[in-house]
Each structure stands twice: as C-alpha cells, then as structure tokens.
Length: 125
Image (cartoon, rainbow, N blue to C red; front, side):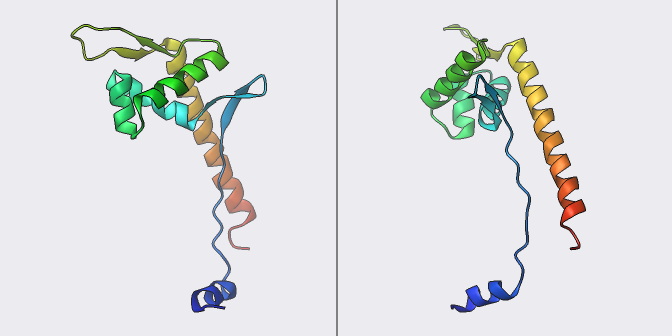
C-alpha cells in the first residue's frame, strides 16, 4: 500500500449525504436542476444566447434542452421575440416561473430533510 492509502485505511472516511431530485412525466425525465438553472439564466438575461454564455453552454444545447422539456411537459416554457432592438428577446412563461419556483423549493426542502436525517442517523455514531 502507498502511504496515503494506508492513512485513509486507518481513518474512517467522512460521509456526506447527497440527493438528486428530478421530475418525470409518463416515466420520462421532464425537469431537473440543469433545466431549472437554464430557465433561471434566461429569466435573468432575457435572451437564450446570453443565458447559454453565462452557463458556459452552447446556444444550441440550451435551446435543445428547453425544447425537450417543453415537449415532455406539454407546455411552453420560454416565449421568444424575433428581431427588434430590445435586448430582452426571451422571457419565461408564467408556467415556467411557477415550475422554477416550486422545483427550487422542493429541491431545498429535500436537501434540508436529508441534512436533518443524516445528522440524526450518522453524526456522532
């Protein structure tokens, strides 16, 4: 064994709980943290291109993921305006705003529950 491996073997690993939350429709992935982040960025930036740049993703990738989510959910998430001088060419639909808000709250509640349960079951044992 190497020096660092033997040290790890003598000391218990620090456990960290993790949980992933996503929504499905008819057994298919519909919405999760990645799409939620993309929609939040579109809401902040007012344009898919700027949102993609902010996230370090390509326009095509972000647009494609949003369209996939819209198809799976059966509702429009982003309204776009073609052309014009206005920098705000894309905006979230009311349905998307609710979805982002409620999904974010659900994800936070799950993380809080996980933290409490982990502390109750593992900390100090």
